[in-house]
Amino acid sequence: MALNDEVPASKAKILLGDVTQGRAVSEALMAKIGGVLNAINDAAYNDMSFKMNGYVANMTNNSDNGWDGIRRITADVNISEYYMSLAKTGSSSSCSINIAVYDETGAFVNNLFSSAISISGNNGDRVLIGRDVEAVTTFAVNNAGHSINYGTLNLTTLLKGYILQSNIGGGKNGAKNLNFNLKLKEV
Image 1 (tube, rainbow, N blue to C red):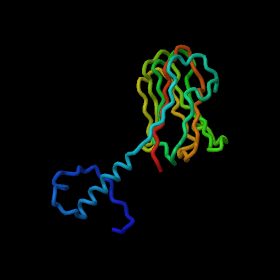
Image 2 (cartoon, helix red, strand yellow):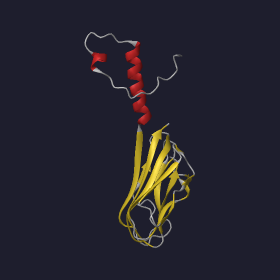
Image 3 (cartoon, rainbow, N blue to C red):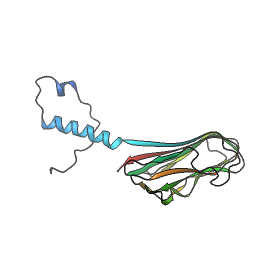
Image 4 (cartoon, one colour):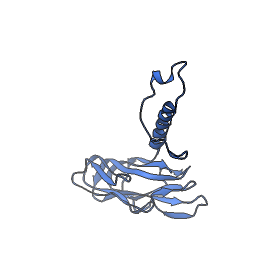
């Protein structure tokens, strides 16, 4: 094994017998500790969420840019998962969200999605849709009778200093408590 090879990530438990008083620090113990630390690093994710509590009624395209403030990316990250949920879907039309991405100078970079993530349908409760980007799978909960669009990402990597601003792409009568989450993994 070369000196610059990574210790394989491992969730092996550090046992009392590994660290008792007088026990020598061995190569095996250091490999175990290194594997556990690498597993922690591999599992480190940052969740970023945009929420609009209350009714999301009669919104027109981009009518409320930045409704939950803006977020700054503090390190280069890959998007590993995203999802949108509605506590109540309301009636007719659709609810959607897109995220405008700006660089650190304030210049527009792109929209996060080329087609926004959206849910349309009548009178659903606790509807959740999303995509696991790493596993290339989608998921949906309580979506019977609804048309859904999982969105198509324009960007999968967000650079340090990028600013994210939420944009409601549509709203419907009776829709309530829109939530959008990004799960980010540092590059």
